[in-house]
Length: 161
Image (cartoon, rainbow, N blue to C red; front, side, top):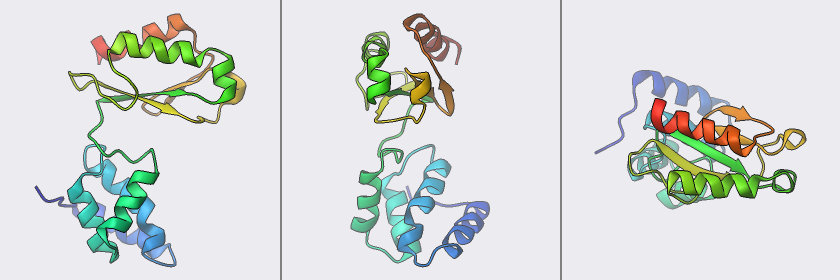
């Protein structure tokens, strides 16, 4: 199925492209907008659309998609849980939090629960070192996360929506 942008998305893409010195420079922000419009992921159809829209090869666009971890190459779950792995977080227990996530969700980083509710991810840094360990759920940051708090967060995602 082809990716068909709305008129609003086309307007936003035009605005984005106009701010950059070249189409290639606009590739990342264009991909981010298209990902949002495509249920949170960059499908092969989105890659083809962006390549055509910007006059790039699909290989160039795929290179951007595979480089940036915030561009999803598979459809994510309804919620994304990011566990920070940087040194500050690791020293304050993020490895235990990640293990707890894996056991509770039954998946490893990069996977989505079978019911499609949660995708587990790791981040090299979520830029909140002073409040480690940090877990990001969708766009919300949870700082100084304890194992008990993580359990409550995961229960809410799995059973309350």
